[in-house]
Length: 221
Image (cartoon, rainbow, N blue to C red; front, side, top):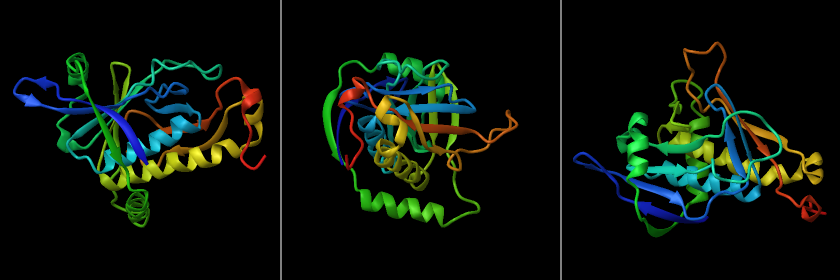
């Protein structure tokens, strides 16, 4: 997949960070209350680009991927506060409490186009799935209306394939032709347990076409 991004090089103290954002927003994709049971709802474009962004994050150890999901078109389903999304490896040196300052310093970025390798992503995702024990999970936290996912290559690759699955199968769900959202899959095993809650954390991934719904057709119709 080809991703059109904007690259920034903000500084915090003596450190320079590399931050990338989608060049055009994911207008019909949103994330609500992800702290313990989140709801991510998106159209085909949004879910497909999230798959690409997670894949890019998997192989970019020193890059912070920021996806602005708060300024899109609010869906007419769901409840709760909207959150942005940030993906990073531990090597990127990002502390969530630093993020508001870092984001304010983004300034003017430069265009960047990258390509993801779906075959490599699938291989690394399968390697993660083949390790049912002692495998890395995504550390997660929320701060300043932003959901942070911190992890390594294989678990980010697995999340990428989860979003690719949602983008491919979401439009095939029955109720979406009438504009309703449909549950497709979830990020669950990829997320590290949180001792502060009694249940395993989960982000449900739903497909929802954008209006006007009369223009939407399920694949094969």
